[in-house]
Length: 154
Picture 1 (cartoon, rainbow, N blue to C red):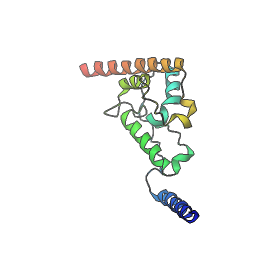
Picture 2: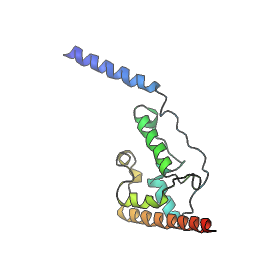
Picture 3: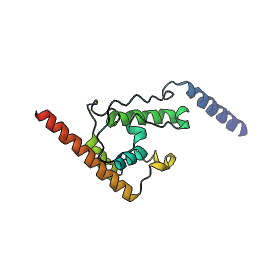
Picture 4: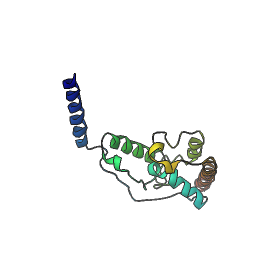
């Protein structure tokens, strides 16, 4: 029995070392900021930066485990997907900014992702902070939509 356990441990170690050579997730690009919304207040931006920016901006703080597979695969995937759906650092240059949905997802508890929270306690908002961020996001992105509508009407 101990021989079987030893072999299983060896196989797991070999697999863990082997997957470190898979290239996905080892690079951590933070492209330059090309645009940013007109935040309704510095507090909204600060709360957003604290709770959302790691996945929804080009200002990602990559943790140490983002360099070790398989965690690196998940972290890279989540950041790239988050940026694709809603990225405040490329504001005005993406087809799908979905700013109007940000407050709804936060209000419904869909964001931040549950898997993100245990290793990022700074992203946990109090009920009051959550309400402030939701109101600030609505104010920020409703203004953005109104400006876009005014420009397209001209």
